[in-house]
Length: 242
Length: 242
DNA sequence: GACAAACTCGAACGCATGTTCGATTCAAAT
DNA sequence: ATTTGAATCGAACATGCGTTCGAGTTTGTC
Image 1 (cartoon, each protein chain N blue to C red):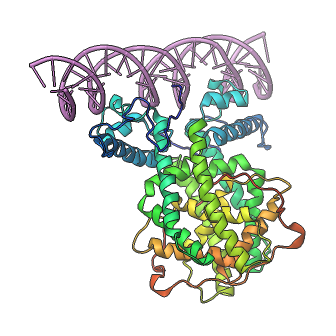
Image 2 (cartoon, each protein chain N blue to C red):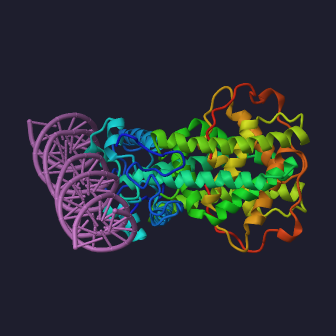
């Protein structure tokens, strides 16, 4: 395996695979891509449940209803599989953020959009984001570097928003920008350890909650949670923590 | 292996091992305990670096300068080893918190002490707390339950402080107590992903920073960082995030 | 010096793993 | 009908793993 984590331009990932248009001439979405998606989806669930190191290719194959050897037609190696999962998830996350940020003007509003986008994506892609958060350094070499680049762009976009908020609403704050940014990411990335979306605790409600804490923490004024999306305070949550 | 994760009372962990006083009659700190500590310390570093699933007993043995078979004189199994590491770390964390909380009166002051204690313990036990944060569900059965109990006590103690702060300083806040507590734990537990103590960013400075954000977020008023322990704002930090 | 218990270790066992090989089926193109 | 290459898979290979066994050495006690 020379090209350790071969990815050409986008994310096609194969030298041998259908590098040029596979079937018809123009429509690029073929059976190959769909089967690959299927396999990656199954792998995501298995890895989220067992952890990357413990997730065997046999278990993934069984879950994806392919033979063990058959999987290697779609994926170069186990690590390459993890790379595809993470690369796609991080890319979607970043693109999703940029789309939603388009046309939004106020810095605080941008922050709200960012948190909402992240929590929303998390809620509808639980397994994928768990794999992204928990297996951050399970990749090595080129694959690691490539995912790191996307994550860095995500970091920069978020940090820019935070800096704008600080400059506009707390210009004499002495908060370190990096530490502040990482505090927000901490709240978001640790979600996978304790939060499961439900109607008691909607993603929107949780987003408002996190925004309220974080925003109130970095500028003096706490932002009130909008009444119609309040969190349910009723039942006692299961004690899962660290 | 009948008694899956045998622990008698404290944490001695063996049926076969020196259950009664091993050498002299009274002094309980023997060569056995010291060797065990040595092995666990080595194991902690290896597991922190490689991850639990990838950390082989052979690697641990080599690092601890024991033969592979020799380790099993001190430890029942690989999982038992992880249990000992986590059990000890969580216990220390909890005891440390209770000690430092003793005699502290104000609710805000308690919160400050809690954060400072946690970050301080983290800074001087980097590897151990990484193993605790990252391998939270690598244990199974009785071993998992036992560590969970301690974590739950830690959670309860922290939550009680937060509730006291809220009741005293923001009585009409509608923040969900569980979500709020988990937000604090998020900031603390994610530290292992990005923070390495240095003189640029001292544990004390970081503690103040986190306290400022979190406290300002849950009660309206931001608490200023004390000037003599400000964070260095100079150099650009390495972009490691998610 | 004799005994027993604590300690140490080389060697091996059984098993699960990621990956590859070669053959076979299938579908589109000429 | 023939050819081509993608798709699929059973079987096997090599390797590394956690754990155990049994024999050896050390250490403290009588």
